[in-house]
Image (cartoon, rainbow, N blue to C red):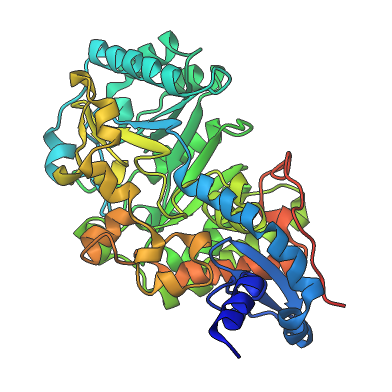
Length: 470
């Protein structure tokens, strides 16, 4: 056979077959299901569930592979847009560096939380005006950007923060993430009457658990105060509870789910502790120890839903699940690569300094510029931001070879940098994310997805391709 003939054959078959250099790679994965196995194209975030005895048929069937190959370019384009084509739509606004608590895992350095600066009302209003002008320039008029007052503890700047919300209430969607200890009746009335999103932090279902990690500077727990706030918020739809998962509370996760459901909390987050600073790493649970408790807690949310008809959505797991069933419908941008830091959102410190994400506020090398000096647009393109926005899972081992790499994203860049020694390293909970992806695929196989996702999650979505092997 001549060389010319060989080249012609290569040209005519290019892209028609799987698992070669010229075609996509479909990876079978064991999802721990009795009947089904997963089949994933990692680059396109495409997946299919197949009966185990049909896997070989699928991998060699043109009736199965052909329709997928016709749509693969579109799936790749969607992932490209999701990963690299989005504009900033949110700001984590830190109006103060200070906090009245000294939680064990906080990513803000102690000296900042104890003695840091707080914005004046004039500074906060000026910052919001600058942000308004910036977003007006880059976003369509129909899109309203989000400002989440974050911390440290934003209610230490309460008067300035509320003045900003009142003045700019038509320009931004506002949220507040707080430890809850400074929420009195007047503050709650202000927040609920304006339908402001509210996030509360609580790490346990009982004082002895919750107060292990969340304490005042004098060592006192704050469980009782947060419970008072939860009682007051019954029936309010626009709030959630963040539970940071550590060695101190991982064995109690199912009981925490029971407790939050009983308090009628609509949404919670069971967030594995971010390991940016040493204090967090000291109480980090091992993946293999945490995973069984974590998945059992997810099971419990489904059991409670079947029993009561009322959901407790675990938002961070829901994001992993929706990243599989409808990648572009995901709400959080931590579990993708590059993560949302510096491209979908950014953080503003109380001094006006700009960071890709609040996790980086204690790391000066990730300071991209200062809002008050007119450096916002330059910050988004700065080397400090590009360290984060340029972090791709394809450049990280072993993530580059992982079938679920676009359902996970190897988070978090801050903890990868600080805990594991560099941006091109995995994050802290690789095995836990892998187990969540397997669990999610089992839910899909058993048609149990809706119990774990917010109502209306599939509004505006449609099935792109439906493949089966007879």
